[in-house]
Image 1 (cartoon, rainbow over the protein chains, first blue to last red):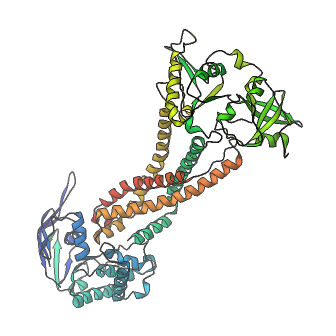
Image 2: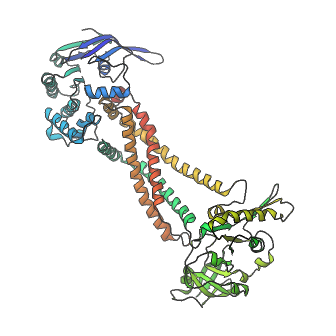
Image 3: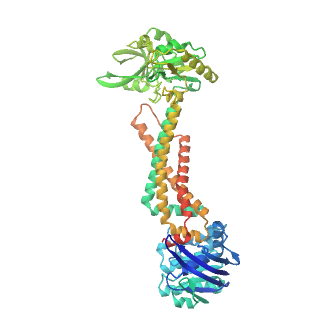
Amino acid sequence: MIRLQNIEKVYRTDTVETLALNKVSLEIAKGEFLSIMGPSGCGKSTLLNIMGLLDEPSKGEVKIDNQQTLNLNDKQLAQFRNKKIGFIFQSYHLINDLQVLDNVELPLLYRSTTAKERKQLATEALAKVGLSNRVKHFPSQLSGGQKQRVAIARAIVGQPEIILADEPTGNLDSAMGNEIMDILLQLNKNDGTTIVMVTHDENMAHKTHRLVRLFDGSQVQ
Amino acid sequence: MLKNYFKIAIAVLRRRKFFTFISLFGISFTLTILLVLTAFIDKVVGDNYPDKKRDRSLYISRISQTGKNTMSSGPPSFYFLDHYVRTLKTPVTIAISSGFSGTNTYVNNKKIAVNYKFTNAEYWDVLDYDFLEGKSFNKQQVANADKVAVISADMKKEYFGDVSNAVGQYIEADNVKYRVIGVVQNVPITSYMTYSDIYLPYTVAKDGGYKSNKSYGGGYFGILLANSKGDLDKIHNEYEQLVKRLPPEQKMFDKVSSHADSYIKSYVDTGDDRHSGMFIVITAISIFAFILMILPTLNLVNINITRIMERSSEIGVRKAFGASSSTLVYQFIVENIILTLLGGAIGVILSFIVLQVINSAHLIANLELSINFMVLFIGLLVCLVFGLISGVYPAWRMSKLNVVTALKAQ
């Protein structure tokens, strides 16, 4: 499903050159649930961003669903992400000015769907994460766990084949973290969604199919 | 999609009330100034009472004499208009009138400021004053130097009070009593060639300036009436030929110039042939409008950039979930147009209020300003231009934000 080959990422300033990723190659199968671990600054999030086509590698190639992605322009990349990938972030990144339902509808705005369809799909996604009774709330009226569930609903509303989660339980206590993890496991098991999750939590990582460890930008496991 | 943009635009406006106030204030205040200014210009240029035959009239408001280092310019004299201009063959007739002069008169020990002007009899044929009472003076009365007067409705009210009839009564101006023979509808002071409180035959002028002043310059205006629109060019050329033949009055001058122009051209005539009044006025108005608009636009651009940077997380999320740069530019411009239209609506309401205040305060005699559809259309156009100009650059900058950087910003 996702194939990374010899990925390198270098950050350059006038005086310093930092190697964030060093020849990382990774193949993730369809329906797999993979977790990425490593100390802070080892390149986990950079790798996830490259997988999600939010960032470009300095070297190497990214293939998703057998499609080469390096030559896609801004518009094609946007469409590709919209169709194939859902994102979950550690700090939720909900739009505070919009109600829960409008937040969840967001990915559908960039597709040719009617308002009625959008509402229906968003309502279904919210039901899936157990938040049917919070559709009219604003993010500021929700707890951390609820916010992350809204973020999951937003990630799955467009039925993407891939979900990329960057420390989804990082801001939550263990009970809430477990709830979120359960939802992700259900999604993987029931819908066959490919999930790649960056985490610091060994327990969470061990619940996934496979664990990849990074250290100083290189893959060590 | 638009509904979503609208929701977020309103939410953003409500969230940062101070920024919103500054933005809306800038737009609405600028628009108010522009609308009031346009209403004023529209009134001055467009209002044609009592000058209803403007489309077949040419105006002589200035005569200049220029030398190497010297120039003399001003309204023409009665003698010039009567002796030279009257000889033109194409015009049907010529209305001659002085500029208005001010004096004080007293009624029951109450001081009243009065403006009066002198006219010939043809003046009343060329201009279509609405007579509320009586009629104008005729050639015979002018020739006899009869002490008769036509007064404005406001003058009647001020001088005689709420009487039904003023015709036949006497009005005093400059210590001379005149018999009122007609009352006309008021003319705003901005129509400076036709405005006055009292209109008198030119022959009653005390100083006799119309007789003794044989120079080109004086304090009079002339309006040449053509038989049809088609004759205007002919009259214009005939007049130019006439002026060309005139010798300068003094040695220091080498050229005489004067034009019989359309109303607007004569209104802005500077007397300097090298820089036409029209050009100067249009340039000045354009520069003024440009400066007036560029300041709030720059202000809006600045505020918008600040607002955008606050929303970088939202931009990152939208991009991550499939918004292309062009979609984001579109969204932001729509949001900005909503803001400017809101400011525009407030500006239009403010303009109505300001115009009401100006009208009711009688700052300018007999001037009733109003907003017409043209002015509203201009206002709407200005709003859209504001929205586009102040939205495009910030939107473009926003759309170029790197997703990862944008997401990290929160």
